[in-house]
Image (tube, rainbow, N blue to C red; front, side):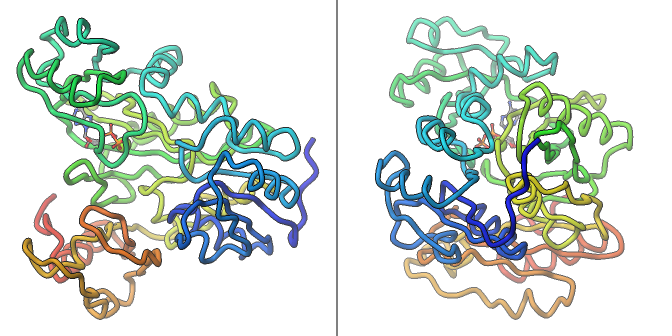
Length: 390
Ligand SMILES: Nc1ncnc2c1ncn2[C@@H]1O[C@H](COP(=O)(O)OP(=O)(O)O)[C@@H](O)[C@H]1O
Ligand SMILES: [Mg+2]
């Protein structure tokens, strides 16, 4: 049995983005000190952590410094080099394990793993060379060619319609391994975040219903507007995947719902997830606090929601007054803050860019419909497209 790490001790973090920032804040609330490795001069997590090690993730001095300081280390992004996790695991408790991260880093490994779990995935084929791309099964069209590694927020994906498009799309990825996935008619998208500790105890949060725009999460609605049995099945699927991975930490499972309430798993993220940001304001224990609890060997916190919530992502686009604007200006946050149950979170990123996640707003209300109404108003007021969507 692991001895809990007492407050006052250092927890280590690989990655300086917004997920790391919110983890740092939660860990600091519990009394821990946080040391983060991130190569950037200025990073969302680096600017709130107690110590920022500004080196590459594989830099021996940076890793040695973190190893000397922290009894336990976690990560906030799946593309952290496995070698860094393995090095740190020699002296520190590392969650998630390099093995779990490796599966989520590669769509081919991930889909093979999910199939071994007995979980349904979208029909797909692996493309490793031009010949694979030229002979792709027409039953997978229209489809999406997704690079096996390093894709996020819809990057590293090309939509294909005809057989000839597949080879072109494959070449446009530089000939790196890809999957071709059939494009499905989605009734909805769901995600489940699950925490699992080293005793195999698990906790899931309420299921989120996710709306994407241009491949990037736009809105999460909680609880998801799906039948209870489907929500329960989604939670059971996520818990099952965490158990199969012998996972330690916080894991997100993204799912597709197709006609007739069929549930398919899209992908897994070995970390807290954008669709779980609502847990900060709406739940007894947030996904970030839970990440710190599991890492420190503390008991799992209650994951119940106090209140329905709708989270709206704030992308850099709204810093630009129109499609042609070249210089950014600060959005009018009064338009958010005038709603007393809208909770604004900004990540402290210096440079707003179109498509870049700059912050989010969580709208709380007694019903999901009322939270959605506030979210739509805020989207309209900030100039976020799709305010009148479902
Ligand atoms: N096979 C598919 N059919 C329909 N929509 C898809 C499919 N694959 C991806 N999408 C859409 O694109 C979004 C991003 O794709 P995803 O595979 O999750 O990549 P990322 O790693 O960028 O999140 C999904 O959430 C979904 O909205
Ligand atoms: Mg995704």
